Image 1 (cartoon, rainbow, N blue to C red):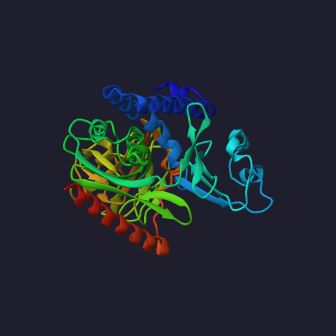
Image 2 (tube, protein in one colour):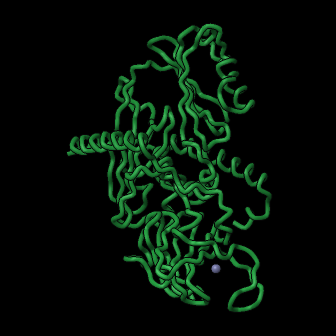
Length: 432
Ligand SMILES: [Zn+2]
């Protein structure tokens, strides 16, 4: 992976999109591939190697909701051009949308009260991944983005196709993807599932035999009872070593969709800048004269002075990879959060309850207490953030620690969560 360090950020981002587009190309072909082994191998290599790892940084810097839906009803004086011009997308994308619509012969005349629905994926550069235009009361034209060719594929559909909610659960026997494919879950749903969990789980290392998952997602069925399309994931639970990682789809505000855990916390949470309360930043990242060793040395972390015994929190969800003696670092804890980030906490007086190598922790959980063990002049926490194997300045991270639903949003989320839980019970009862 050294090659990534040699190229500039701009080139990196271009390189990233090229990779992403080619991967989506591969994925599209897997969907049509009848060979399951082939499919599996492609999904695995895609998710485990490049996709999640490289997209994670891009996603974490994006505070917008993942998906946005824009509904529009035409009024007198509207043109296709004026409708598209009002979308918050770049010029190139506007042109693509307009050209796509104008090419469609059945959409020659724009009528008043005609409905438009645009679906944005805010993680993408060209955001519109799907849009629908109502032709008349019974028919609509759906345009889906083919990311390989950067064009839209259109299909006229009758509005009366049926949306079905599907529940699947299984114990993971060898790999997550294999188990999911065996259940008949479509590859695009599996990829979405892995993408949603990418903040909390390192798919290369954290899935063990006998872990399990549950999922509810939408399928669209035509009159011949054939699945014509898959929709969105409504609920999922990935159970890793008996810890439930649940996610609920929730539409907060109007048409803003994202995923939250059972406590109303966005699953797109990453790392806290200060994993300790009431502390004072006493030494920042960078070159400094070491207080004990006496010579100038790179300080690869951030120090927070705090009274002996102050609780230290896990700055993100993850798995403890070390809880023991680290020499100069004294008693230290190391956590792997996902395939990109790790954090280190040093000089602790003691460890938090149940904190040992291999245990899973949630953001904010107490992992230890401030001390002065190892090479230390007084009680403080030495905190390090490691990004793709390299120590970085935690205070300069542009990472959101995750949106938490509050007030009215929280109340509405609770209602929506209960509805999903009831739906889940119903779907499970139908299995038996
Ligand atoms: Zn330090």
